[in-house]
Length: 205
Image (cartoon, rainbow, N blue to C red; front, side, top):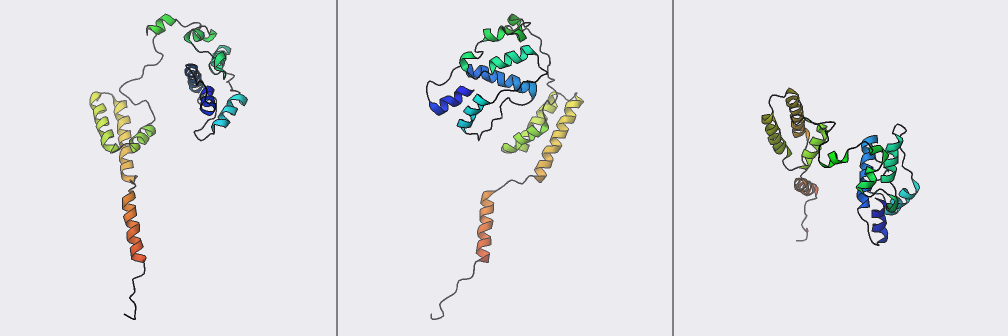
């Protein structure tokens, strides 16, 4: 949220729970549109981000309803004093007027989608990236795949996806070379010794 960057740059009293409602607006926008409302990267200077919030206007899709846009605008208000900052504000929005909040609080609302626990619901690429960052990734993934396989052997779709993922992991095992800095250092030292000129003795001696 903007006040976080202001607090980082100028000090002061810091920030409060309004930043959480800003985060809710950012998440809702990204879920609806597929990208975030602001183009921010980790290497952006804080000063440029503060200027960004004061000069760049969030672009809302024309396909969204006026009520949806109004709710997002209130969640993404730069000034925290004018931002939606409590549940009562959100409940009063026109976009959510049809929600039965008592059912929401009691978890009685039926979800629109219930994922099948027996199948994969993500791009295997992300699984592979996670495994590369782990120590002994193939060992861990094989154990997890074996565990998943024993849970639900009757689901052919789950089995085929796990088999595909296992094939990808085996391909990585064959092609991915683990970098060994110590081994490289020793190799460079040996090469340096082999190309260095031999020592000569003084002819006078």
